[in-house]
Amino acid sequence: MSTAVLVLAAGRGRRLGSEIPKAFVPLSGVPLVVRSIETLLAVDGVDWVQPVLADSECARFQALSLPPDSRLADPVPGGAERQDSVAAGLAALPVGVKYVAVHDAARCLVTVSQVETALGVAREHRAAILAAPVRDTVKIAKDGVVVETPDRALCWAAQTPQVFERGLLGEALKMAELAGFRGTDDAELVERLGVPIRIVESSWENLKITVPGDLPLAESILAKRNQ
Image (tube, rainbow, N blue to C red; front, side, top):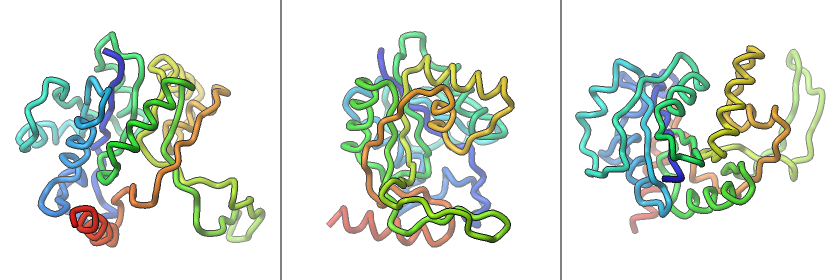
């Protein structure tokens, strides 16, 4: 066994305005987490898929209609924040896993090809993330005042999956915990170790469903793909 994917699905979906946890919100009748898992199980070279959910939602997950597959593990409860959930998922993986991809269940439009490319780059370079070049000019501001305008050609919007050697991700989590550091994505933790992270160009279709307007956009992307 070589490669596992942690599927993070512990978010509550408050910004989405949903009465149910975001992972279970349907897109064209299929829950977001199911769509993500179905794609990941179709990826060549994925040996283990580990869902991570809020403790209160693990039973709900097990009641979903998912394809029978020995690579799909029972869910494990996540933590209060993303890093806690990643650490919980990492601890649940079999010993033989060498590479770990971390994926947001809410990015359910990621493609098999995108995941396979990210895995291949990480196996060669230890760390790789999907990202899309930003389309807008980015401003760095403090107290409502612009202090810097970075070169747009250098700016990328990070996505998932983010793929790392297992030991590298484990070390990054440990060092962040010792320093009391909380990052906004997993790559940020690995960056703090001084390890180069390769970018695999993705597209804006790999959006993270976060606010109500994202659902109709995702529906339109899905409809276009199914034509």
